[in-house]
Amino acid sequence: MSIRYGLLALLAEAPRYGNQLRSEFERRTAATWPLNVGQVYTTMARLERDGLVESAGADDEGHALYRLTEAGRADLEAWWRTPVKREQRPRDELAIKLALAVTAPGVDVRSLVQTQRSDSMRALQEYTRLKVRHPDSDLAWQLVLEGLIFQAEAEIRWLDHCEGRLAREQEGGHREGGLSASQMGRREGGLSASQMGRREAAGMPSASKSRPVRT
Image (cartoon, rainbow, N blue to C red):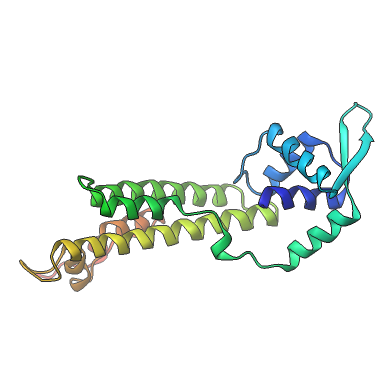
């Protein structure tokens, strides 16, 4: 639905042709949802069929222009006022993958979690670098990028939680052989490996480096 209403929002400003809509949509959303011209024209055909857009002739170079109809404007205004329901958002592939892995025989779930965390960390670092490199970017771009940063941070925290749950399940809920590595780190005032990675990515010293040595 984001593409449909994204195109309507752009047409509410001025008539545009397909490639203009594609490039402007990607610019304003920090290229989070790359589009191709085929997707744009397919969506525009559906919007025209539904009476939400109509032909606006052509520009000086012969590009076919589209403009919003009154019905399209009303539909867009209703979208602005309506919250995006969490239960209506696309399914989370990672959550589904992990749920299936936990119940499938022969899958190294802990390795799966660690591999995913590494990739999520890579994405978080890339988003952070982009934010630092482009401090003067327009507000729309910055908001989308900050949303990606928060989502990546939340995903990493969730993966940390999943790893802890898996460890407890494997231990059968009993402390046999002492505390887990992550628990030992917290008891000693240290951080888990993933937390240390995030601190180092942010340029912060790890707890082990900053703690004075007792003699």
